[in-house]
Length: 101
Image (cartoon, rainbow, N blue to C red):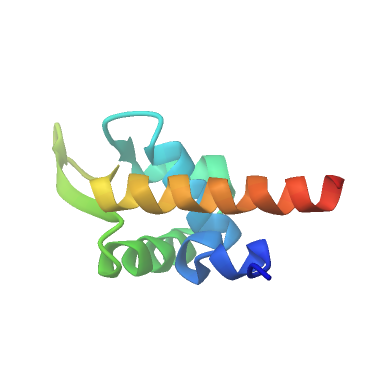
């Protein structure tokens, strides 16, 4: 008997805000912190914590710099992040397929 599809869900990735960060970051080369904050309707502190968890897991890179005189933070998904996101989507698809049977 095979394991239930939920056993393939990654606790780091599956949390809804972190999943949102990864999916948005996967759509472009990098994404600005303020855009993520607005798109996911998070406070700066909450978003920062989720990005730190993803960064510590090697799923995103963080780049700090300036745009003009304004400090900016950008987030980019790593290859490991893309792999983890693809695995999460595959697990969700397997769960849906099992449910639809």
